[in-house]
Image (cartoon, rainbow, N blue to C red; front, side):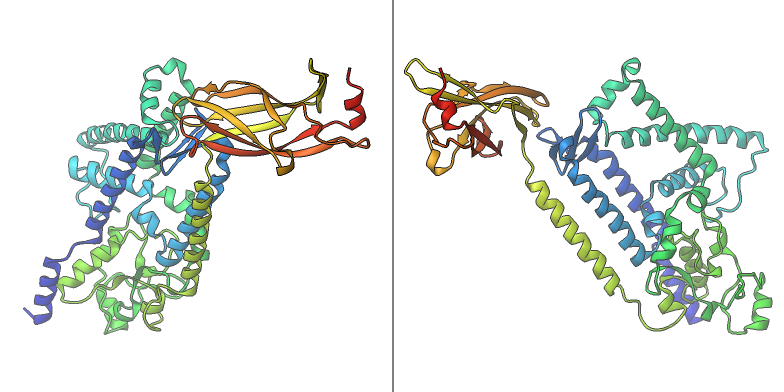
Amino acid sequence: MSEAIVKGKAYLKGWVSWRIKRYYFFAIITALALIIPWIQINGNHFFLLSFDKLKLHLMFIQFDMQELYLMPFLLMILFIGIFGITVLGGRVFCGWACPQTIFRVIYRDLIETKLLGLRKRIANKQQEPDYSKPVNQVKRVVAILLWTLLAMVAAADFLWYFVPPEDFLAYMANPDEHTVLVTTFAIIVAFLVADVVFIKETFCVYVCPYSRIQSVLYDDDTVMAIYDPHRGGNIYDEHKTKQFTKQKSLLEVNPTAECTTCESCVTVCPTHIDIRKGLQLECINCLECVDACTKVMGNLGKESLVRWSSEKEVIERAGKTHYFRPKIIGYIVVLLIVSAVLAMMGSEKEYMLLNVNKENRLYSTERTMEGAVKVDNSYIFLLQNTLNEKYTYYFEVILPEEYKGSITIDRPRDPFVVEPGVKKKTIVTLSTTDELVKDDRKDTVIPITIKAYALEDKEKVVVIRHSTFTYPRYDIIQNVQ
């Protein structure tokens, strides 16, 4: 046995395939997706967009639907992040984090192959099971039933980010009262069964728009699973037509070609492509072809002909791959800016919502028993408690320096309680008996600041609103009976 083959076998002995690494990564993602909806801090979830209660929970902070100005920033982070990852690592999201890929691995590799033996081995994804055999038909039914149970868990987990788990379970226990939720759940389960069992990777190839977007984002430094034609030889010509199916024919044309034409990289591909053909939209960067070639070439004491690298490094041989190039840095900068803006706007979250509107009547006047003229301005306060417990609210009026102490709260005289999630409408009247302005030409508009707060926590639950107090012309004051 040659020294190269001995070294190759030694390398393979300690080698951990990308497929196994993906399995671990899938397990971590799945665990996080299932656990996160159950975690609460002060009754708030990490992420919850509740259409039922019209709330957004983000990073364990609760926002009302009127505060959904944060959503565009979340979507920007999502799409910019995916685009940046694509520029850097191709469709690595598809192969390593996409639910479609994870579900297909669970169904095809775990249920069909490992548990039921419908497929002979994971390394051969091209050969479909022979369903003409009665035993295989029974196994297929069992496989679909097992996946249907898992699809129900996946559908429930998805809905937990829109209906919190504690409410979801209660609602599902009373399906007659929650037909929309039950119908949505059933539709998602049916889609997952049809997609994973029947549509398969066709979804990735023809339905998912991401494969079309990636071709625009790729550049010469984008990292992907790529075949080295300099070492392996050109299996396809410039028209993407296959030239060789046997190693003997390949060696007759290119004696230095190392490709064994074993087709291991082809049979293992979940999207049914030949990586030796070059860049293809169907490639999801699962790196199973890298594993297959590494194993074959490793046994021959050689490096894999399929590598996770860039066209610049493998095809063009123009130097090392540049990971932190200007385009990637640009994406990182934009992500940091958007994240900073989101954090800044989120930090300004108000723990109560308050709309202050003046009544249609500008003011009312009356003469008091003491002979002074009382001027009232009335306002409609629409207050909402956005927290998870009831609070007692009141407010104070802040006046310009020259009017301090002259305008007081006429009603309500006492603080009022608002239950969590409830909107309370309150009529507030401010009044003065002082002669604030002696202007015979026009009414005087005085700017005021309203500071509303919860008595239980004046530092945290507080909002500031600006409004005006209208004082009538002096001739109106003189004519009040």
